[in-house]
Amino acid sequence: IRPLLGRGAKLIVASRLGESASSPGSLGPGRNKKAPSILDTAELLSRELGCDVFVPDECTGDATKKIISGLKDNQICLLENLALADDTGQRAEAFARELLPYCDIFLGDSIRAFALDSATTTRLPSLVENRFASDRVIDELRSIARVLNVLSPPLLVIWGGNQMKQGVEVIRDFARSAETIAVGGLPANTLLKAKGAQLGLSAVEENFEAGARTTLEQWGDKLLLPEDFIGAASIRAAQQEVFSAERIPGDRMALDLGPRSIEALQKKVNSAGTVLWIGSVGFSRSEHFRRGTNAILEAMSASSAFTMVAGNDSVAAALAYREPQETQSNDGSGNQPTTIDCIAAGGKATLSLLRQSKLPGLEALRGNSDE
Image (tube, rainbow, N blue to C red):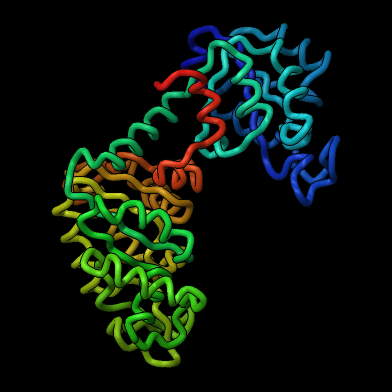
């Protein structure tokens, strides 16, 4: 937004929060009372940018047209939440055409939004000749392309999270190009259980044990499974112990990587040319079980490899870890700023692109071009 304002653009910003009026579970066609107003976002935007942000009551109509035509330097028109209107379904095309008179240039700024077929992600850009992706989107797309093409081998994939069945589809696509797939979180528990490990109260995807055995048979030589865990009786337990990954007592659960597992993973990061991390490796929402997650971030930050973090929970951990680091400098204290090359903002949409699937919003931007 800042560079566009700096170049004298009359800027219309639009976003959607929550379900659209035509989504399952909404109130049906028309105004969607379940969706929140965009006003809180407008206040935040105004504070961050130090400029006036106007929000018309409706996304289209005379009031909106009047605000847009009267915009001056360093002012923004933020449309009311698009989810309040019919921006998906049968009304999407008509809604896009109502927005079209306000739009000379379309700039898509969210890979996450590109996963949606809607008035503002697919219909409007298809109607506008001058359509572009923002610098942030281009940077993330370049990072995805770099990882897919493994421009700096060897490739290390760190696979965690709280669901194995979904993540296994992504891992399957990397099994050929990755030298090592280091596993943590629930996928590690499920794979270890399939190998016969006794995991006590640890979370396991019970209905995917057959898939776990297939995974071990197909990629066993590439999988780096944990050797030990930090365990406790519950996520709130003060007493923590180190257990072998093969045998956790019946009244304990694995909640983080143990010291030997962390050391093995750090060695893999240090020797990699490209590192892709998807999914947390422990119960990182608790400071007591964040060692494994922080160890990965420290190793990735210090590595000379090209590093990328994707997936909602690992991205959240990377952003939380980066915040206090950004104000620190190399002042002799040993503290270094986090230097991960790409912390992907696209969530499941990024994972779809890593699987080389197409996103409707991105294809709309491409049009007939292969750029």
